[in-house]
Image 1: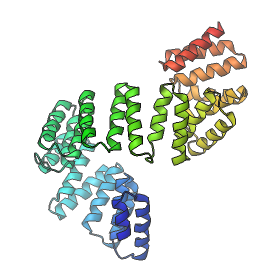
Image 2: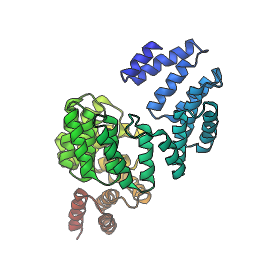
Image 3: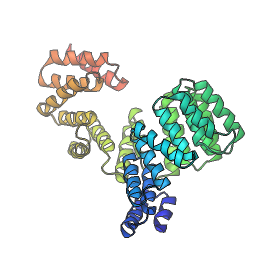
Image 4: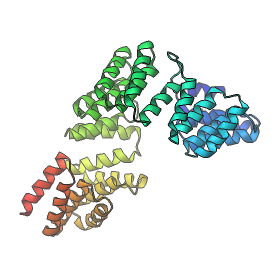
Length: 385
């Protein structure tokens, strides 16, 4: 157990889970390992697993209040609000309205859109200027759900002023500003956080996300690149950077970033797909592209974007007969996707069906394509005249 707890504190959740599982096997009479596993799964937001370990703990000690609380959390996260509320109400009576139980009752009320009841629970637990962030977040989420963003923002600005050193409240203020449509305020607060925490890759990622939502892809890319410099081994950053480089037409850089992403997570279907598509688009190795997309399909066989790349690679290999049925099924399944219509138009044109190609190209133009796709469509239509 101690080794697992140490690993959990270090953020090594997978290794911690192995130790807790071993402890559970060695000592089937103790609830400790099962509760530790429930806590780990809660950190991962795997609520079905939280419920499983809570039930295992309750099989050992039927009235364990911590196991009952984890069971309520697991039920809530799994969407079983009615059962969760009934069990939380009973737990509140048995534990004389313990704050954690009341917090769950507020979360359940919020999920079921019983906003006055949710607000009452969160207000009871919330104390102005308190260091507790969870009840404050509950209130903010309730106001946002009630379409009262200004009220939520005023609450958070007041709290942030009273506790400028609280990173939790600062992060909640940023999220509230975003929800209220105040991206300038969110960015300003994030920049303050970055100044206070210059070594935080997470803050830089949040800056990148806000800049991306604002449409400033260059600024977003710079923020993500700063994050990668601070945490070069962090998974996910290379893919985010590659995606933006891709959108900005920085194709060699994007290919490099996708390769870095796959070095960390070799089976990531998005990175496999994106790299395969770029290789096909930029005159890269089509055999490698085909291998990449085959691997991606093993992980996400039904994903439309991956099937589209599969067809596009076949087009680049001059196998129109293989590409056509894939693209035909995609435009039937996703009638509003401009890219699929464009690629189908190209395939029809290559097969000699000029009328069908023109029709699909015109449909693609009507679906608000990206600039890159629109340029391709217009070039194709010029050839079909």
